[in-house]
Length: 358
Image (cartoon, rainbow, N blue to C red; front, side):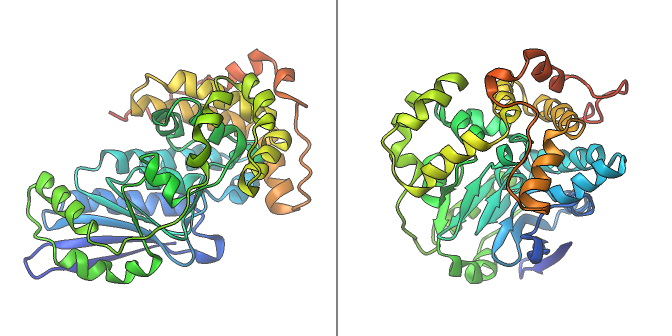
């Protein structure tokens, strides 16, 4: 469910509030939610009085990702839900990245998978003391999509590969240090946001509005915490020059924190096909423009929906919850190269539905 609200300001301008409002599912994104959000953004971009858009989540999460249970059901039913979902989700992500007006994303709590894709589309990205980020798709046999072929490539060499093949969690301090967020504040500061936005001197000049919003967000209460990932980034990067080096070198690192041990567990027990796809998507996506990134990822995602690992991973971790997925291959080296390359091909004889992205 998506709810919208327009905050009317005294100078004739307004703020468009877009809220992911399914807290019982941690605001997992559905096809209808993606369509509704995209339609609202398209309407607001035409309105001269809408100076800024705020994207937030209700409850204890911003967004935990796409509703993969519903995707699995579509696969079992033999319908085209996944094709339609991934198209709409990526259209929404792309629209956020290209939106001409400032988009403030309030990334509190869980910001994972598809939620991170939404977050990274914002021009002004706020994290809080409760923020927990991850691209955990290796656990369910998918891969880091939603533009991750682009934004993981913006990180220091090796870190994008590490995050993709381990599903590692990182916190707000890490996000700030890595440039994934620009503002770090307390969770309670969200209550100040309407008044703060009302105090901004908005105009019809987008550049002016972006600058004014930046200045306003810098006045939010400061927060502090200790990093996890970035405290060890040098050794992790050295271990992740490529996939096979990472598989052998990461377990030898002297990092005892629980988050890293969980990352190793995910690497050892996660989907081997996912790990291979991560390496390939980062190599292929390194020089691609954003529109081509989403076209590539649509092919990859639909191909994943037509192979056994994705529905099996969802079953094991989110449906039956036995956490014992039966992957198609036992290791990354056992996955044939041709099997990986096929994921980058159009899944049908029809054209890519995202060919119209500029």
